[in-house]
Length: 156
Image (cartoon, rainbow, N blue to C red; front, side, top):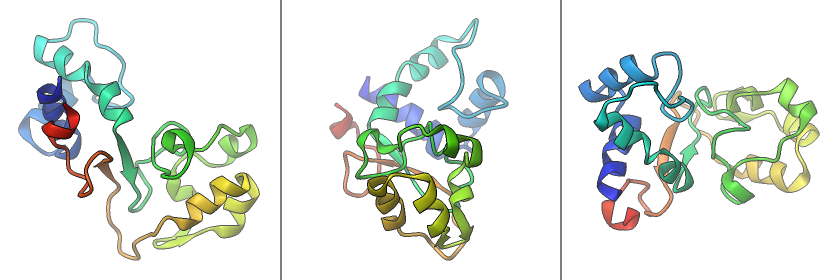
């Protein structure tokens, strides 16, 4: 399982690799690895990699860069909060979807919006996340390693 998870991790973290582009074209062309549904007739290799998705989801989280690819409600991105994501809030769900909706500009949270939409503990957790002033992509971080890189040893 740990070795399969490593291969799935490579598909997620290196989307421009040949194997990642092939899997994306065939199995999740319009969505991400995290949001895709099971395929009707998957290959053995895709079925094997796909079987590790929940394990990877439970052991990783998104480090916020520009916030464009991280969904506030379905992705794990908020350390210090249960399940690494805020609790569903019907008012907030209608108003914001992506993490970048909570930013005024690169490197700056929209403090008033966050305080209005989220409970105090969640608002504090969001505002505590450092943001880069440069435009950097969001990235998946392995929470079982200090350096954030996947390792078969910690996955095992």
